[in-house]
Length: 340
Image (cartoon, rainbow, N blue to C red; front, side):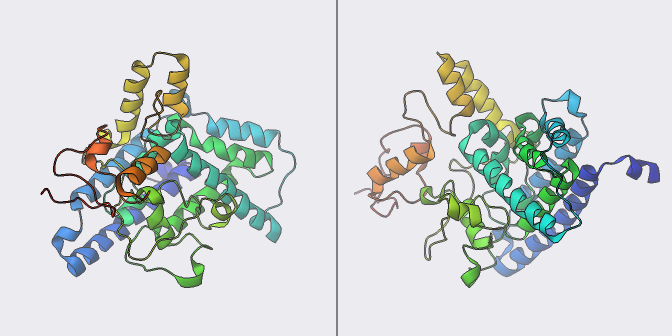
């Protein structure tokens, strides 16, 4: 056992500790919700699907870097070898600089994860839960090495932070985010818009079109405010959680690979090189004819349907239909109108 533990690197140890703790605390939350709201209020099948996803993550993370397409860590090491200077971590300002640079690069990693389909293919796994609870916090992709999201932190190494320090700082950022994945905590007054709170992150996980693509910060809302992506939770607005087109499967492998399969299908039908690039690196929902259901397209459709770019899109729109079937017309509030 001691030799096995000694063989683990800092990332593997951190992931194992975080994983075990997350499972235990999340299970306790599930028991609490079921007792408080009734046994049907908590989806235990989704919980065990998340556990299985993380089991596969352990397997995938054990694959050597050379066996996959990941290049972020070697790139970070190269950046550190050519760093502009070395940030002294035995000083207070060094830790402050670490915090803000990690938050800055995390913001852009997270924003790319929603606005560039290549990165969304991995990140979408985190948004597949149709309930908002702590289980969503550790429902993470198994294909991060393939998409190479960590490359966003490589410039941090160029600025003088070692790759191990960057990974540790990123891990602390993720640990903070665990507790905000809950609908049990109300709005937190003046902290809203300052810290990443449960309220701010509920907005981030919403499928309502007015809430799409916002609140990317890890621990603070500073860069969301600077770059215009902060959106506060509105009182009295019901939130539908999960993907815009809900993921109904409980199959761990399919949840992890569904968007990659969709990319393969789309690239296979591309007629021009530009279409291939659009399907790979355009925003999710991009289509060559400009009629794809991107975030902007969904808001335009909801504006046309209801008079307001708000609400969760109806199923028929997400299936590619431009007119509703009988009995599924929408009112100005976005609610179905009864057939007369």
